[in-house]
Length: 405
Image (cartoon, rainbow, N blue to C red; front, side, top):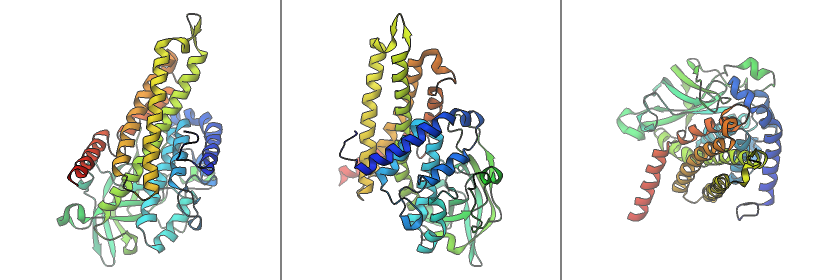
C-alpha cells in the first residue's frame, strides 16, 4: 500500500521517522523491558521529543498538528517493534487526551492538553471496574455534588498508565435513577507512583497539577503480555473534585466515552496489525535463512502457503483499518468500520503470531526470538477496548439499523 489512495508524502515521511526510531531504539531493548516488566521512561521521553505523544493535536496546544492517518501509522509502526511502546502512545493519546480535547472547555484544553501532547506527563482513562467490564453501563463509582465540588468514591481496574500517569478521565454515576444518562466524566490528577524513575529522564510530573487527596494507584498487574506497559487499579476514596473538572455536561459521560472507544478501536486495530506485520516479517526472514533437509525452509510448500496466507490477510487488515481511519478523519460515520477493523486485525494478530512461532519451530518457543513475545502481546488485543464478542454485537447492531433505514 506504499502509493495507496490513503497516503501523502507527509504520511510516508512520518512512517519512515517512526520506523527508524522503533527499529533502532525500541526493538533492541523490548525483550529486556518485557522480561523485567519495567516502564521504559527514557524511551517515553524520546517519544515525546519526537512528537509521538501528541500527533493529532494542534500545534498551539503542544501537538504535532497531524491527521488521524498519521497517528495510526505511528501506532502501527511502533507495534511492529514492541506492542508495549505502541499501547503507551495509543492509550495516552486516544484514552487520556482525546476526551479532554473533544469534550472539554477551552480552559480545560489549555490547562491539560499541552502537558499531555508534549509527553511531559502521561494520561489515562478510568472506565473499567470490577463489575463493569464489557458492560460499561454497570459503573458503580459515584460522584456526589457537595459544596461546589464533587465527591468521588469507587475503584477502576486494568487501567493503562494507572501508576505512571498524572491526568485521568474518570467515569462516575451522578444520577443513579437515569441509567446510562446518569453517568458523567471528570478530570482527575495525581502523582505518578514511580517519580524517582521518571525524574531521571525528567518527565512524568507537572508541578502545576494538584495531587487530589484520596485518588491513588493500587497494585500493578503482572500480565501475560504488554508487560512494559503500566496497568493498575485506581482507587477513589472520598476524592474532592472541583466542579470545573466535570468533563462535558453532567450525564454525557456514557455517550462521550462510547465515542472515545469507537476511535480507540481503530488505534487498537493499527496496533494489532503492527504485531501481525512484525511477526510476519520475522517469520519471512527466518524461513529464508533456516535450512532443513539441505535447503531453506522457505522453499517448502507447507511454509510458503503459511507465508502467503499471512501476507494476504495483513493486506486485507490494512485496508479495513486505514479505511476506518479515513472515514473518521473525514467526519463520516465509522463505528461499524472501526469495530470490523478491530475485530479482524486483533484476531489476525493472534493467528499470525501463532503461525510465526510454528515457522520458527522450537526456536520460536524460546526468548531468543521476538515471536513468542509478540504472541503474548497479541492476546489482549482480542479483549481490550471491547472484546471480539462486543465487536460482533456492534457490527450486527449497525447492520440491522442500516436494514431498518
